[in-house]
Amino acid sequence: MAADKTLIGEINGNVRHLIQLLQTRSKKIRKDTGITGPQLLAMKTLFESPDLSISELARRIYLHPATVVGIVDRFEGQSFVKRRRSKEDLRQVNVRLTAKGKGFLRKAPGAAGTSALSGLETLPDKKLKRLSVSLSQLVRILELSAK
Image 1 (cartoon, rainbow, N blue to C red):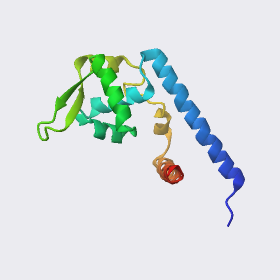
Image 2 (cartoon, rainbow, N blue to C red):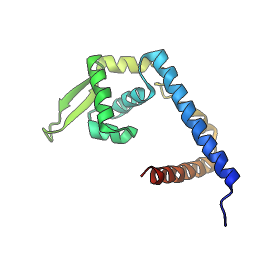
Image 3 (cartoon, rainbow, N blue to C red):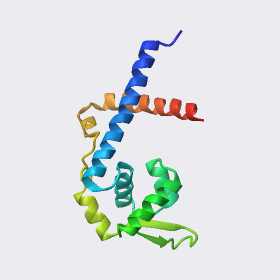
Image 4 (cartoon, helix red, strand yellow):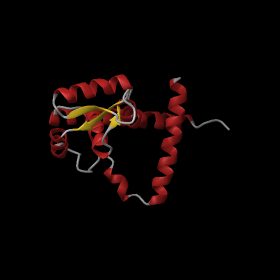
């Protein structure tokens, strides 16, 4: 059975639209706070899970470790984060938010649990599950095409 080219075109258009919306949101966050959307996500992740290694933080926010090093360097320069050697493995350096970083995060738009996707909470669980499965399939398809 041949794939419906019209549906594939609609999906492709929606993916491009989603990317554009995310870029617009990131620009707004930068304008409002001075940091980008990915930087805000890094801060939120460090708030929720203190003492993460650079590689673990990168894995959780889907960025390359070198990109995360740049984010951490900037945050360290602003005294938002502090690096510490792991007590379990002295080769590993962990990152945690400072009190200044936590204060900045509390004031940042979208930091108090509100999300661009908060409308998902209005969907019934059955629809959420279908959406989750569909998005997972789309991510796998895009990952395969990126190789």
